[in-house]
Structures are given as structure tokens and as C-alpha cells.
Length: 385
Ligand SMILES: NC(=O)c1ccc[n+]([C@@H]2O[C@H](COP(=O)([O-])OP(=O)(O)OC[C@H]3O[C@@H](n4cnc5c(N)ncnc54)[C@H](O)[C@@H]3O)[C@@H](O)[C@H]2O)c1
View (cartoon, protein in one colour):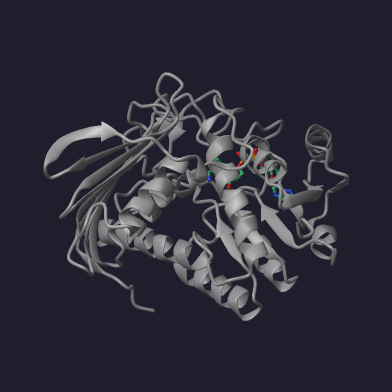
């Protein structure tokens, strides 16, 4: 086998531990050689847990290492954009958590730089790498549904139904300094995009693949069902935070199919809580990634002459190499993402699913839905400018 890809990870927090590092350590194509976190103690604990030889606190030290092929950015939101551009500048293949940037035009700029340098990119659109979803894509490509007619996507989980569950998931020892609080414009138009950019994004991504088309226009509403909640773990009082914790939009596809989405993290259901359904001229498929009684994924199919949906067994080839029955959903799905990325880099061809270009398509739809809500109207895609 070819030499393994050498990986440097920036951000040693919770998602790094439950998804990214199990993914990299489970792929036979990668070796994590360095981990960086501004919190040295945390980085050292992760290094010990996952057998990573080097720890740094300054990401520039990691980027300047010519022996690192792939950079994994798993810090929180606002830092994704500057770290992404710095890693591109340093000539690294990049995996970054979503959103890469809040404005789709910036994601396209990053995509253009990556392409000009022959670099591969991957965004944390986790759910397309669930074995059930990869099998569903394969069935659709091979004609199982025929021509696509209707897509319905849902994010349905209750992770923020409890107003005392802090908006900010980080465990702070002291109040975060220098961070602009969001959701402080209480007007209808001022609502801060949240759920739609959270698990809305990977659901939109799955929908685009299933309808196999761009969208031409969208109309949507962003809602705030739980207006008062604790902002951080250090707050004892709830405060008004105007965020979209529930939203809906519908859209028309360039190929004539209809597309609808509901995304919400205040709807009762188990984490991660994603469902996607596609109906076509020759059949229908529905995938459910809502952990129920220990089952992390199910896929059902139906045909015009056998309309009762039946469970479909997912072939072994769609599971990541280190898969073990009973593993958590985040480990299984993210291991699929990481191994797929490693494979794409090693293969060296054009194939690069879920890359910056795809993430920009998703982000453009999110930006269009937010605009539709603000301006009370249908918005055409592509957006102007
Ligand atoms: N794709 C998914 O399904 C999914 C699921 C959960 C979380 N996420 C995303 O993963 C990211 C990380 O989430 P988390 O829960 O692990 O957050 P976290 O706060 O637990 O961890 C982030 C870590 O990054 C470190 N950090 C921040 N800026 C840094 C910098 N400039 N240099 C070095 N270290 C830095 C912090 O000290 C922290 O330890 C977020 O963007 C989140 O939205 C994605």
C-alpha cells in the first residue's frame, strides 16, 4: 500500500473526539501526526487518547510543516473561514466543519483557490456518509426511483427543546471575551440563522444529490419557538435570543422536481434526527438517521407495484473499514466521511464529493431562504452577485 497521508488536526474539542479522530485513526490511509488546540491540556489529553505524537497550541506551526498533507479544522464557527484560507495558502488538502463561511461567495472563493492548487476539500456534511445514505445515492444513480418528482427533508431532533440547555454548547470556565453575542436583533427580519445552517445544511445537501438538480427558486420562513433560553453554561438566567430554531422552505428544481425542507432542533426526536424521502416515476426511498432503540440508520424502499415500504439491507461495501456493530452514529458516519476523503486524495482523480463547491451550493440556498424570509417573497437562484 502507498504511504499513509499525514494529517494535522486543529481543534481538540468534543466533535474532534467523537467523530474526527475515530475517523482518522480507523482509516488505513491516514496517520494523525499533530494536534493543535489553544487549550494545551485538552490537546495533550486527546494526543494521549489517540496516540498522536506532537501537540502544538499555535496553528501556524502546524500549517508551516511541509510533511503534513491534510489539515482538519474542527474548531467552532467563526474561526473556520480564516483557518481555511490560511490552510489553502499553506497548500494543504482540507477537511473543515460547516459552515466554511457564512456567505456562499466566500466558499466559492475558497473552492477556486483549492482547484487552482490541485487541492481536495471536504466539508463536514456528515450525513451523506451514513452507509444508508451512500447506498440510497447508489440506488438513485442506478435508476431505482426513475425520474425524481418530490423530495422531502427533515431535521427532527429536540436537542434545544429545553430552554435551560445553553445555546452555546461549549463548557466555559470563564465568560467568553470578545465574542459578539448573536440573536440580539428581536425584529422578525433580524432572526439569526441557526438550525438551517446546523443540521439543515447536510439535509439540503442530501436533497440536492437525490433530485440531481439545482434549485431555481425558494420561499421560506424562519421561526423562533423558544424565545428565551440560557446563552452559556455560566448563565443562570434565560435571555431573549432571536434564532431560527425551526424553519421551513419549499423550492422548485431546474429539472421540474419539487423540493421541501423542515429543519428544527426543537422537534421531539432523537439526535441526530435527519430524515430524507425521494419519490420518483419508478419508486421511492426514505432514509431515517434518527437513533431509535440502538438502531442508527434505516432505509426503506417501495415500488409502484409493491407500494408498502420495505426495509432494505445495506451492503457491507458502504460501511467504513473499521466499522463494528454497536458503534455510535457519529463515529460510523464520520468514519465514512474521513475514509472517503482519504481515498479521494490517494486516488488522485477528479472525484471529490461533499467538497467546497457542494458546500457553496448548500450555503447559497441557506442565504436565499434567509433572504426570502426577510423580504417575504420567492427568491430566484442562483443569487445575483
Ligand atoms: N458535522 C456535524 O455533524 C457536527 C456535529 C457537531 C459539531 N460540529 C462542528 O464541529 C465544530 C467543533 O465543535 P465542538 O463541539 O467540538 O466544539 P468545542 O468547542 O468542543 O471544540 C473546539 C476546540 O477548538 C479549539 N480552538 C478554537 N479556535 C482555535 C484556534 N484558532 N486554534 C486552535 N484551537 C482552537 C477550542 O479551544 C476548542 O477546544 C463546530 O464547528 C461544530 O459546529 C459538526
